[in-house]
Length: 259
Length: 110
Image (cartoon, rainbow over all chains, first blue to last red):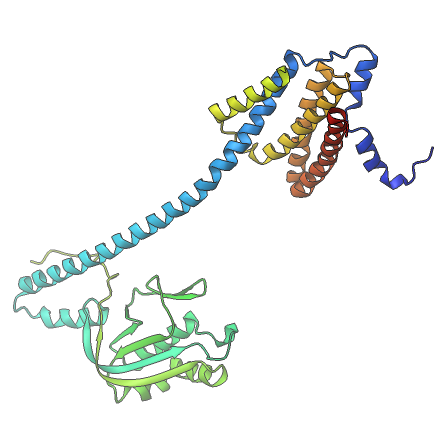
Protein backbone atom coordinates (compact mmCIF):
# COMPACT_ATOMS: atom_id res chain seq x y z
CA UNK A 1 0.00 0.00 0.00
CA UNK A 2 1.22 3.45 -0.87
CA UNK A 3 1.92 5.67 2.10
CA UNK A 4 -0.57 8.55 2.39
CA UNK A 5 2.18 11.03 1.96
CA UNK A 6 5.60 9.84 0.93
CA UNK A 7 7.27 12.92 2.34
CA UNK A 8 6.01 11.99 5.81
CA UNK A 9 7.80 8.67 5.56
CA UNK A 10 10.55 9.66 7.96
CA UNK A 11 8.13 10.66 10.71
CA UNK A 12 5.97 7.58 10.15
CA UNK A 13 9.02 5.35 10.29
CA UNK A 14 10.17 7.09 13.45
CA UNK A 15 6.90 6.35 15.18
CA UNK A 16 6.50 2.81 13.94
CA UNK A 17 10.06 1.79 14.60
CA UNK A 18 10.32 3.58 17.92
CA UNK A 19 11.49 0.31 19.42
CA UNK A 20 14.63 -1.09 17.89
CA UNK A 21 13.33 -3.71 15.37
CA UNK A 22 16.16 -5.96 16.54
CA UNK A 23 14.17 -6.70 19.70
CA UNK A 24 11.38 -8.27 17.62
CA UNK A 25 13.92 -10.11 15.47
CA UNK A 26 15.72 -11.46 18.52
CA UNK A 27 12.39 -12.55 20.00
CA UNK A 28 11.35 -14.38 16.83
CA UNK A 29 14.74 -16.10 16.73
CA UNK A 30 14.20 -17.19 20.30
CA UNK A 31 17.21 -15.21 21.50
CA UNK A 32 15.20 -12.89 23.71
CA UNK A 33 16.31 -13.11 27.34
CA UNK A 34 13.06 -11.57 28.62
CA UNK A 35 14.89 -10.23 31.67
CA UNK A 36 17.89 -7.90 31.81
CA UNK A 37 21.15 -9.62 32.63
CA UNK A 38 24.58 -8.59 33.80
CA UNK A 39 25.46 -6.84 30.53
CA UNK A 40 22.35 -4.69 30.74
CA UNK A 41 23.12 -3.91 34.34
CA UNK A 42 26.55 -2.56 33.36
CA UNK A 43 25.00 -0.42 30.61
CA UNK A 44 22.42 0.87 33.09
CA UNK A 45 25.11 1.75 35.62
CA UNK A 46 26.86 3.74 32.87
CA UNK A 47 23.57 5.46 31.96
CA UNK A 48 22.96 6.39 35.59
CA UNK A 49 26.51 7.66 35.97
CA UNK A 50 26.15 9.77 32.81
CA UNK A 51 22.98 11.32 34.16
CA UNK A 52 24.47 12.01 37.58
CA UNK A 53 27.60 13.52 36.05
CA UNK A 54 25.56 15.94 33.98
CA UNK A 55 23.41 16.79 36.98
CA UNK A 56 26.39 17.41 39.22
CA UNK A 57 28.29 19.46 36.65
CA UNK A 58 25.33 21.75 35.85
CA UNK A 59 24.47 22.37 39.51
CA UNK A 60 28.13 22.91 40.31
CA UNK A 61 28.89 25.33 37.47
CA UNK A 62 26.08 27.77 38.32
CA UNK A 63 27.30 29.01 41.72
CA UNK A 64 30.85 28.77 40.35
CA UNK A 65 30.13 31.50 37.80
CA UNK A 66 28.72 33.89 40.39
CA UNK A 67 31.49 33.19 42.88
CA UNK A 68 34.10 33.67 40.14
CA UNK A 69 32.57 37.02 39.29
CA UNK A 70 32.56 38.10 42.94
CA UNK A 71 36.14 36.96 43.26
CA UNK A 72 37.20 38.97 40.20
CA UNK A 73 35.45 42.05 41.53
CA UNK A 74 37.25 41.56 44.82
CA UNK A 75 40.59 41.35 42.99
CA UNK A 76 39.83 44.57 41.13
CA UNK A 77 38.92 46.40 44.33
CA UNK A 78 42.03 45.09 46.05
CA UNK A 79 44.21 46.21 43.14
CA UNK A 80 42.59 49.64 43.13
CA UNK A 81 43.11 50.07 46.86
CA UNK A 82 46.71 48.94 46.45
CA UNK A 83 47.24 51.39 43.62
CA UNK A 84 45.90 54.25 45.72
CA UNK A 85 48.16 53.21 48.57
CA UNK A 86 51.19 53.07 46.27
CA UNK A 87 50.35 56.49 44.85
CA UNK A 88 50.23 57.99 48.33
CA UNK A 89 53.49 56.27 49.27
CA UNK A 90 55.08 57.53 46.09
CA UNK A 91 54.02 61.12 46.75
CA UNK A 92 55.51 60.94 50.25
CA UNK A 93 58.75 59.45 48.94
CA UNK A 94 58.96 62.08 46.23
CA UNK A 95 58.62 64.86 48.80
CA UNK A 96 61.39 63.19 50.80
CA UNK A 97 63.61 62.95 47.72
CA UNK A 98 62.98 66.61 46.94
CA UNK A 99 64.00 67.66 50.44
CA UNK A 100 67.17 65.57 50.33
CA UNK A 101 67.97 66.88 46.86
CA UNK A 102 67.64 70.46 47.99
CA UNK A 103 69.83 69.76 51.03
CA UNK A 104 72.48 68.08 48.94
CA UNK A 105 72.56 70.84 46.38
CA UNK A 106 72.64 73.44 49.13
CA UNK A 107 73.21 76.83 47.63
CA UNK A 108 74.67 75.40 44.41
CA UNK A 109 74.07 77.08 41.09
CA UNK A 110 72.09 74.15 39.68
CA UNK A 111 69.17 74.66 42.09
CA UNK A 112 67.28 77.28 40.00
CA UNK A 113 67.88 75.21 36.89
CA UNK A 114 66.49 72.16 38.69
CA UNK A 115 63.26 73.88 39.63
CA UNK A 116 62.78 75.12 36.05
CA UNK A 117 63.22 71.59 34.78
CA UNK A 118 60.91 70.24 37.48
CA UNK A 119 58.14 72.65 36.45
CA UNK A 120 58.54 71.92 32.75
CA UNK A 121 58.65 68.17 33.23
CA UNK A 122 55.62 68.11 35.52
CA UNK A 123 57.51 66.68 38.46
CA UNK A 124 56.15 69.26 40.91
CA UNK A 125 52.72 70.85 41.36
CA UNK A 126 52.51 74.36 39.93
CA UNK A 127 50.37 77.40 40.68
CA UNK A 128 49.82 80.46 38.57
CA UNK A 129 47.50 82.40 36.29
CA UNK A 130 46.27 80.85 33.07
CA UNK A 131 43.24 79.74 31.10
CA UNK A 132 40.56 77.12 31.65
CA UNK A 133 39.01 75.56 28.57
CA UNK A 134 35.95 73.38 29.01
CA UNK A 135 35.02 71.25 26.00
CA UNK A 136 32.16 68.80 25.67
CA UNK A 137 30.21 66.69 23.21
CA UNK A 138 27.65 68.45 21.04
CA UNK A 139 24.42 68.85 22.98
CA UNK A 140 21.85 67.49 20.53
CA UNK A 141 23.95 64.98 18.65
CA UNK A 142 23.98 61.31 19.47
CA UNK A 143 26.22 60.42 16.54
CA UNK A 144 29.96 59.92 16.62
CA UNK A 145 30.46 63.20 14.75
CA UNK A 146 29.32 65.20 17.76
CA UNK A 147 31.68 63.53 20.22
CA UNK A 148 34.99 64.76 21.53
CA UNK A 149 37.67 62.30 20.42
CA UNK A 150 41.11 61.64 21.80
CA UNK A 151 42.74 63.40 18.87
CA UNK A 152 40.58 66.48 19.46
CA UNK A 153 41.87 66.69 23.03
CA UNK A 154 45.42 66.07 21.82
CA UNK A 155 45.07 68.89 19.27
CA UNK A 156 43.77 71.18 22.02
CA UNK A 157 46.66 70.37 24.35
CA UNK A 158 49.24 70.71 21.57
CA UNK A 159 47.71 74.06 20.60
CA UNK A 160 48.09 75.25 24.18
CA UNK A 161 51.75 74.19 24.25
CA UNK A 162 52.30 75.98 20.94
CA UNK A 163 50.63 79.09 22.34
CA UNK A 164 53.15 79.17 25.17
CA UNK A 165 51.47 77.31 28.03
CA UNK A 166 53.93 76.30 30.74
CA UNK A 167 51.87 73.51 32.28
CA UNK A 168 48.72 71.73 31.13
CA UNK A 169 46.31 69.41 32.93
CA UNK A 170 43.20 67.61 31.65
CA UNK A 171 40.52 66.89 34.27
CA UNK A 172 43.17 67.22 36.95
CA UNK A 173 45.71 64.93 35.25
CA UNK A 174 48.93 66.76 34.51
CA UNK A 175 50.10 66.40 30.90
CA UNK A 176 53.80 65.72 30.55
CA UNK A 177 56.04 64.26 27.88
CA UNK A 178 55.13 60.86 29.26
CA UNK A 179 51.33 61.22 29.29
CA UNK A 180 49.38 59.69 26.47
CA UNK A 181 45.94 60.93 25.45
CA UNK A 182 44.28 57.88 24.01
CA UNK A 183 40.93 56.30 23.42
CA UNK A 184 39.89 53.05 25.09
CA UNK A 185 36.45 51.79 24.12
CA UNK A 186 34.33 54.92 24.05
CA UNK A 187 36.23 56.70 26.82
CA UNK A 188 39.18 59.02 26.48
CA UNK A 189 42.06 58.11 28.75
CA UNK A 190 44.83 60.36 29.95
CA UNK A 191 47.76 58.55 31.52
CA UNK A 192 45.66 55.34 31.24
CA UNK A 193 42.92 56.71 33.51
CA UNK A 194 39.58 57.26 31.83
CA UNK A 195 37.97 60.68 31.90
CA UNK A 196 34.37 61.76 32.37
CA UNK A 197 32.93 64.54 30.27
CA UNK A 198 32.97 67.51 30.21
CA UNK A 199 36.71 67.77 29.66
CA UNK A 200 38.32 70.59 31.65
CA UNK A 201 41.70 71.60 30.27
CA UNK A 202 43.72 73.92 32.49
CA UNK A 203 46.83 75.66 31.22
CA UNK A 204 49.20 77.94 33.08
CA UNK A 205 50.56 80.82 31.06
CA UNK A 206 50.05 84.50 30.42
CA UNK A 207 46.23 84.94 30.60
CA UNK A 208 46.38 88.02 28.35
CA UNK A 209 48.38 86.44 25.54
CA UNK A 210 47.36 82.76 25.73
CA UNK A 211 43.79 82.98 24.32
CA UNK A 212 44.85 85.03 21.30
CA UNK A 213 47.94 82.94 20.63
CA UNK A 214 45.89 79.74 20.94
CA UNK A 215 43.48 80.78 18.15
CA UNK A 216 46.46 81.21 15.86
CA UNK A 217 47.67 77.62 16.37
CA UNK A 218 46.62 74.46 14.53
CA UNK A 219 44.77 73.33 17.64
CA UNK A 220 42.90 76.62 17.73
CA UNK A 221 41.71 76.40 14.14
CA UNK A 222 40.90 72.68 14.64
CA UNK A 223 38.60 73.51 17.52
CA UNK A 224 37.08 76.52 15.76
CA UNK A 225 36.19 74.12 12.93
CA UNK A 226 34.70 71.52 15.30
CA UNK A 227 32.76 74.21 17.15
CA UNK A 228 31.33 75.68 13.98
CA UNK A 229 30.54 72.52 12.03
CA UNK A 230 29.73 69.90 14.64
CA UNK A 231 28.53 72.07 17.51
CA UNK A 232 31.08 70.76 20.01
CA UNK A 233 31.04 72.91 23.13
CA UNK A 234 34.13 75.06 23.61
CA UNK A 235 34.43 77.55 26.44
CA UNK A 236 37.60 79.49 27.23
CA UNK A 237 38.00 81.51 30.39
CA UNK A 238 40.99 83.13 32.04
CA UNK A 239 41.85 82.47 35.64
CA UNK A 240 44.11 84.28 38.07
CA UNK A 241 45.12 81.30 40.12
CA UNK A 242 45.27 77.73 38.91
CA UNK A 243 46.89 74.83 40.71
CA UNK A 244 48.01 71.87 38.64
CA UNK A 245 49.11 68.66 40.35
CA UNK A 246 52.37 66.84 39.66
CA UNK A 247 52.36 63.86 37.32
CA UNK A 248 52.52 60.78 39.58
CA UNK A 249 53.59 58.62 36.67
CA UNK A 250 56.87 60.44 36.27
CA UNK A 251 59.41 57.98 37.60
CA UNK A 252 63.12 58.45 37.98
CA UNK A 253 64.93 56.27 35.46
CA UNK A 254 68.49 57.62 35.41
CA UNK A 255 70.42 59.00 38.36
CA UNK A 256 74.10 59.74 38.91
CA UNK A 257 75.90 60.30 42.17
CA UNK A 258 76.71 63.90 42.96
CA UNK A 259 80.42 64.62 43.35
CA UNK B 1 14.56 -5.18 39.35
CA UNK B 2 18.21 -5.49 38.39
CA UNK B 3 17.59 -2.67 35.90
CA UNK B 4 16.35 -0.17 38.48
CA UNK B 5 19.10 -1.21 40.90
CA UNK B 6 21.73 -0.70 38.20
CA UNK B 7 20.37 2.71 37.33
CA UNK B 8 20.28 3.81 40.97
CA UNK B 9 23.79 2.43 41.53
CA UNK B 10 24.99 4.45 38.52
CA UNK B 11 23.42 7.65 39.86
CA UNK B 12 24.91 7.03 43.29
CA UNK B 13 28.35 6.35 41.80
CA UNK B 14 28.09 9.45 39.62
CA UNK B 15 27.18 11.69 42.55
CA UNK B 16 29.65 10.08 44.93
CA UNK B 17 32.65 10.16 42.61
CA UNK B 18 31.39 13.20 40.61
CA UNK B 19 33.95 12.54 37.88
CA UNK B 20 35.07 15.55 35.90
CA UNK B 21 34.52 14.81 32.26
CA UNK B 22 37.33 15.89 29.93
CA UNK B 23 36.58 19.31 28.49
CA UNK B 24 36.44 17.84 24.98
CA UNK B 25 33.53 15.57 25.93
CA UNK B 26 31.64 18.16 28.00
CA UNK B 27 29.44 19.60 25.19
CA UNK B 28 28.36 16.08 24.11
CA UNK B 29 27.19 14.89 27.54
CA UNK B 30 23.59 16.19 27.20
CA UNK B 31 23.15 14.61 23.78
CA UNK B 32 24.62 11.34 25.07
CA UNK B 33 22.09 11.38 27.90
CA UNK B 34 19.19 11.90 25.49
CA UNK B 35 20.48 8.98 23.41
CA UNK B 36 20.79 6.84 26.54
CA UNK B 37 17.21 7.73 27.52
CA UNK B 38 16.02 6.65 24.09
CA UNK B 39 17.73 3.27 24.49
CA UNK B 40 16.27 2.91 27.99
CA UNK B 41 12.69 3.64 26.93
CA UNK B 42 13.02 1.31 23.93
CA UNK B 43 14.31 -1.44 26.22
CA UNK B 44 11.49 -0.89 28.73
CA UNK B 45 8.92 -1.16 26.00
CA UNK B 46 10.56 -4.34 24.65
CA UNK B 47 10.63 -5.74 28.18
CA UNK B 48 6.90 -5.16 28.56
CA UNK B 49 6.40 -6.75 25.14
CA UNK B 50 8.39 -9.77 26.41
CA UNK B 51 10.86 -9.31 23.58
CA UNK B 52 13.72 -7.91 25.63
CA UNK B 53 17.18 -9.08 24.66
CA UNK B 54 20.27 -8.35 26.68
CA UNK B 55 22.52 -8.18 23.68
CA UNK B 56 20.22 -5.96 21.62
CA UNK B 57 19.87 -3.54 24.54
CA UNK B 58 23.60 -3.23 25.18
CA UNK B 59 24.39 -2.85 21.49
CA UNK B 60 21.62 -0.29 20.94
CA UNK B 61 22.65 1.63 24.07
CA UNK B 62 26.32 1.87 23.13
CA UNK B 63 25.68 2.61 19.46
CA UNK B 64 22.98 5.21 20.26
CA UNK B 65 25.22 7.09 22.65
CA UNK B 66 28.28 6.95 20.41
CA UNK B 67 26.47 7.85 17.20
CA UNK B 68 24.60 10.75 18.78
CA UNK B 69 27.81 12.20 20.17
CA UNK B 70 29.64 11.51 16.90
CA UNK B 71 26.99 13.25 14.78
CA UNK B 72 27.14 16.35 16.94
CA UNK B 73 30.95 16.22 16.96
CA UNK B 74 31.04 16.11 13.16
CA UNK B 75 28.50 18.95 13.11
CA UNK B 76 30.81 20.97 15.33
CA UNK B 77 33.71 20.35 12.99
CA UNK B 78 31.78 21.61 9.96
CA UNK B 79 30.05 24.46 11.77
CA UNK B 80 26.49 23.11 12.11
CA UNK B 81 26.89 21.56 15.56
CA UNK B 82 23.88 23.27 17.15
CA UNK B 83 21.62 22.47 14.19
CA UNK B 84 22.66 18.83 14.18
CA UNK B 85 22.17 18.52 17.92
CA UNK B 86 18.67 19.93 17.42
CA UNK B 87 18.06 17.31 14.72
CA UNK B 88 19.28 14.51 17.00
CA UNK B 89 17.14 15.74 19.88
CA UNK B 90 14.03 16.02 17.67
CA UNK B 91 14.43 12.49 16.29
CA UNK B 92 15.26 10.93 19.66
CA UNK B 93 12.56 13.03 21.34
CA UNK B 94 9.86 11.69 19.00
CA UNK B 95 11.03 8.13 19.70
CA UNK B 96 11.12 8.71 23.45
CA UNK B 97 7.59 10.13 23.42
CA UNK B 98 6.26 7.31 21.27
CA UNK B 99 7.83 4.67 23.48
CA UNK B 100 6.74 6.40 26.66
CA UNK B 101 3.16 6.53 25.37
CA UNK B 102 3.29 2.82 24.45
CA UNK B 103 4.67 1.96 27.90
CA UNK B 104 1.94 3.99 29.56
CA UNK B 105 -0.71 2.12 27.54
CA UNK B 106 0.81 -1.24 28.52
CA UNK B 107 1.18 -0.47 32.20
CA UNK B 108 -2.07 1.31 33.04
CA UNK B 109 -4.09 0.25 29.98
CA UNK B 110 -5.11 3.78 29.17
